[in-house]
Image (cartoon, rainbow, N blue to C red; front, side, top):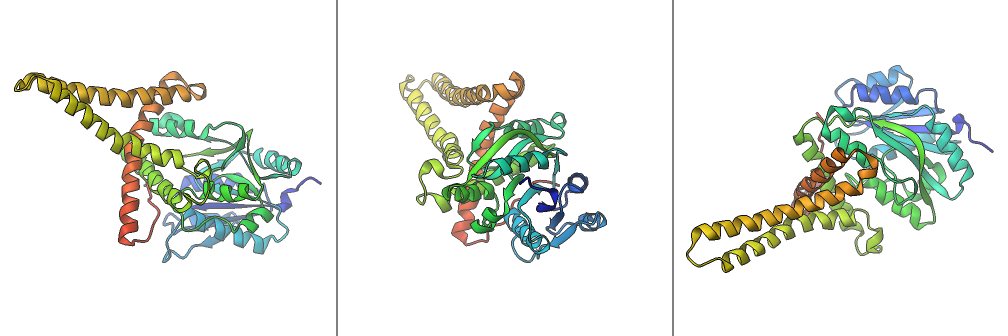
Length: 350
């Protein structure tokens, strides 16, 4: 039997998303039985706007650490109280606008694929032309269609399976989706990404500082997930295994490699000839920088089929710059853990 809109609920989460949230909630209105908006201490009248649309609102207690996982779980819990017959739940971030055809497409997929527990489609950037950072996000969202290890913050899920899993891990400030999907896959569930428009995302990243902070948060959250799961599951299944190890390799180990190259260059240069030794040092640094650019070129070629050649090269360069931001996030995480500080979300939007 086909699922009807009356069996679908939606959870939208946000904090000070302004017009982006308005677009999000409008795109959900009339598409499902019930919408729950979870607000995390917004000061931009988001709550008032949601209520004006007739949307159910949950306001999180901000005396406790905020996380997107906690917000989604709270929204889901309220949805089940309002709509106990709910079969599927659509999670969507407040900076995303749902495609009008997505819910019929997604529910039809779940109806016809009983082993699939979560389905997602194509997330696109709403304004990729506004900044190179938005364009980078658009390339990131363009992942392969087919069986996937995880979904993002926007996904349509089976209520029974999601509830049985215990929901999102509220201790995580980032990477909660891959961690949840790992648990879902470990009990036999499948995650599918299908060739269908799902959401329009508005990253609104217009400055290098905002992009750096977002990337730093990614490194922080990735190491948190990596630390919690490493050794408990095979390395190939640990979320962010490659991201975490790659950030260390292309920063700390890269610096060690450059230091070795420079030391060798100085040793083989004529003793006492400062000019030649200086040139040898420069050559060492050029080789090191060249390795970074070579890797950036390789990464760009890897995504060349998703975008133009120029955008692919920019993506590769910023991926390598991002290794340093991720490593900074990893160091902050290590410092917080050693100091016993509460892990809190790192916000990058103004």
